[in-house]
Length: 432
Ligand SMILES: C=CC1=C(C)c2cc3[nH]c(cc4nc(cc5[nH]c(cc1n2)c(C)c5CCC(=O)O)C(CCC(=O)O)=C4C)c(C)c3C=C
Ligand SMILES: [Fe+2]
Image (cartoon, rainbow, N blue to C red):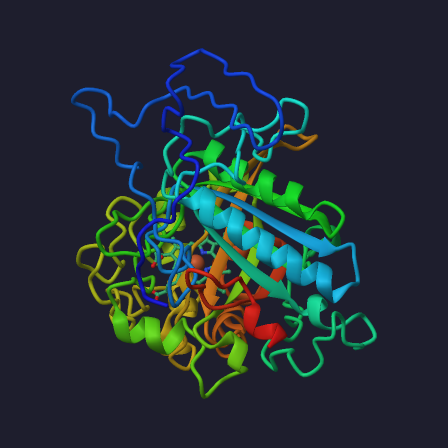
């Protein structure tokens, strides 16, 4: 297994297949006939470079979609197994791995894809990504605690002894209003891309492949990444209008990535080494109330300037925060209950997270208010020492000033296995 590998071969969505040409339909008989129709060629439009044409490598030591520079769109889905058969779980993980391998490289799912198979059988690929480039698609999977043990603690799928000690249920936090229907799950898929159609196509096909073995529990679409995971990216803004992700772990911070993101051998279990834990929290915002808060108040709540993103203690966006600085009345310039102070490693036993969240707007509620917020995602090596530590500091009406404007409504914790090589499949080590 290497960190990066060349794309695998497959049926390119963008290649003109056969000599029939645009719009022509080749008709034949039998599943192996190769009925090909292509709608686009690989030729770029003259003078317009396509930044999304180059796929992100699927194979590697770690799964893509964690330290990979955060794309602009998310489609997150949690599923529950509908079969209790170990063989079904294994075959599902194998089928998902192969499909993700193909889709992330800009190829159709299957041997004949969307339009090259038998006209008498449903296509292997649903087709809505035909003609679209890879668009930076990454597909990342995770396993929930309920995949390993049922509600009574009885092992499922013969996975006795495989449950990671750190894959505990997250504790209840003050102020949580969690809806079980949109929380947890046996399996999670995080599909990220720069084109929402490509992310949706990926999830739709994986859900379709799962039919008879697993079904959707809940899903969430996200737009506008709220974190940068590379210092080459500009910091994007969240729905509160603030730059979000300034102090995030970036892929270039090699030591932080090593210390805070990947599960090392000494932590175990063996099958998870090189993987990571994903925490998801859907956080609704009382956005209309926030919008009535004066600028000074908004900045005091976050602890940073809304325009530049710099700390209120002074300096540009990436200046070190001076929590000791006082104003002329002798009060701390950075409020003791500001979000950045309570979330900062200095006040959380050194804990850091790799945040990878997205904005969402799920239409409007019955009161004419936007159902908007942040679908928070964070990766870490140890959920208790990292997410739980920080969220305990933030939660509750006596803590983070931001809590007046937000409410956590969904929660998930998933163990994401390491990456795969040319032949492996996700979670293979679980069945060794
Ligand atoms: C438990 C972890 C965190 C939750 C939940 C969370 C929710 C949340 N955050 C914002 C907006 C911002 N967060 C910022 C910084 C920041 N947030 C967390 C953790 C959680 N946030 C951390 C660890 C940090 C970095 C702290 C530091 O080291 O300085 C910022 C500032 C810019 C930045 O550094 O990213 C903003 C803005 C919202 C709106 C929100 C819930 C809806
Ligand atoms: Fe935050």
